[in-house]
Amino acid sequence: MTPFHGTDPKKFIADFHASFHDELVNSDEDAGVIVDRHHTPDIVQIADGHRMDREKLIAHTRPVRKNRPTGRMEVHEAVADGDRIAARSTLYVTNRGKDLTMEVYFFGEFTPDGRMRRGHTLTRTVPAK
Image 1 (spheres, rainbow, N blue to C red):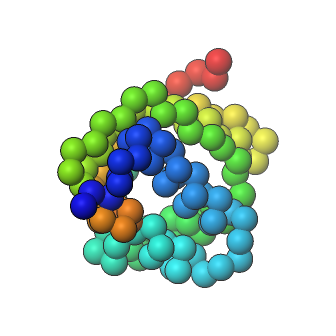
Image 2 (image 1 turned 90 degrees about the vertical axis):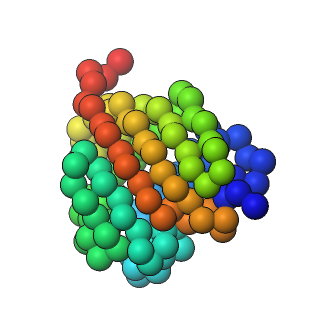
Image 3 (image 1 turned 120 degrees about the vertical axis):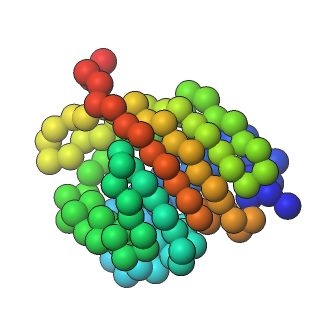
């Protein structure tokens, strides 16, 4: 069984990111519990060359929770093969009154229950449209 259970890969990755972000910014639940609900204990996420394990990912959520940015992700294309997914998207964020638009290239591995085990993300800031 794959983590995507017949779900369109574009929808899966958009829903995964939206759910994780929404839970972080719209609840006071412990960040570690939220991270664990969406990621495996041995998570390794590399974002723009910066490696994050579980503890670093939890620490990374602190400024997100403090600033409570709003955002939306537009997934342009995504493909899945077994437990892996690759996606190209645009992330639109408003944080502390500033708008930011980023191209996002994501390659990830997920468990059958939909948690991320590995993630590699490359981003590039682009002018807002």
